[in-house]
Image (tube, rainbow, N blue to C red; front, side, top):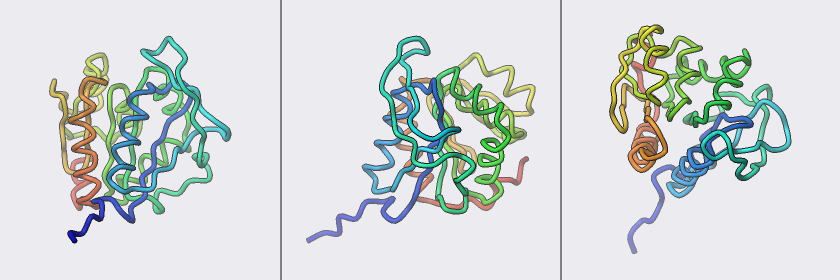
Length: 193
């Protein structure tokens, strides 16, 4: 019988999100990591649960928080996912502890995947400087002003950093997320920053 071990078996993935997260970006990226065998934790600003949204305006599901960001330690995870929605990353980037959590993944050379407005956290932490990334088109100027090279592609990979533009890109985003998380640490993760 063939070995049926999934590629992310034994790995832990953090998803950093709060109220206002775009539901499909949270649920599909979580499902992709879990189906590949990862243990996934939802990290948020407060305990309890978060309210996801559809297209920023319609309430969707509520999801239980596994740990608050002040309880979480990047060293316990093998990768980080930053889903979008407009409100979610805007709230996250105003929280110094959340931004320190994001920065720690880069300092530890661990893969990070951000979709839609999720790259706002990368802008806030300075982690787009010298990197080629994509995002929802409205972030293009923010990314360029932060020293990044913005491209209009369904998915962009830059040395362990996976970025995508919108929910329609989720299949490509999830495939690359799993691929980069399987590869693990990327020695050049901070090289261009």
